[in-house]
Length: 257
Image 1 (spheres, helix red, strand yellow):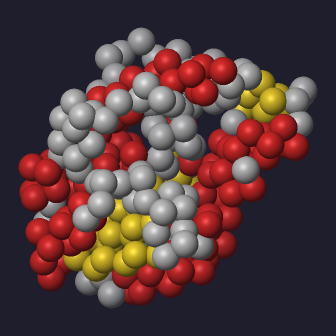
Image 2 (cartoon, helix red, strand yellow; image 1 turned 90 degrees about the vertical axis):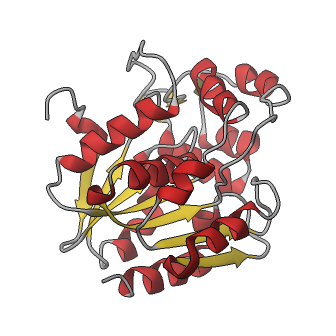
Image 3 (cartoon, helix red, strand yellow; image 1 turned 45 degrees about the vertical axis):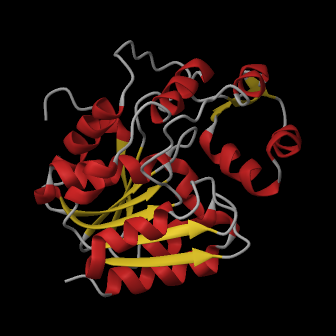
């Protein structure tokens, strides 16, 4: 399709129903690598790189906003020629359900991991100094783990641009801050109410979402929804509690029409 960055969506293996993995803020399609061995037994798996997450050298001067993300994701999914199951983490979960609301013809099922519709009033102020202070390039894996910890450290090693001298940020902190800042100015309940596809909601025990919102999402979706809370897991449930995450996703996808 004209205007679509075809390099942003990549086939990772498997056959059958298409599954598209949609990463969170500061993530990348490559961060799903640990899950690919079992996901590719469930269907034909694709990873997707969202705008402003496609590499440090990838310039994008377009205005930042959820509608832009959803339009890009829709265009990428359309290239596959069949309705897909969207497996979204955090920001990727938001963009996935907004796409399911806007284009139900493209989405046959939806996994939303640790994301809620309403962060209105929240700010990025406490987060910004830390993010701006990150080095553009880390010279060793040890430095990445020291900065982010064992779970997120592995995640970012998969996400960052690999260079001859280390691991480089794969986007620009100013853009990432602007993406998150938008969530403090608007909610996405209307989009959630418009979703008609079957949904799996996975909430971390140590969630970043406002308390009770993911349960409310499940209540609004009724019989179409399955809600799973994973005690003790952090925001990266798929990495922090991989067996619980796998069991929930496998069961959900097996039950899709």
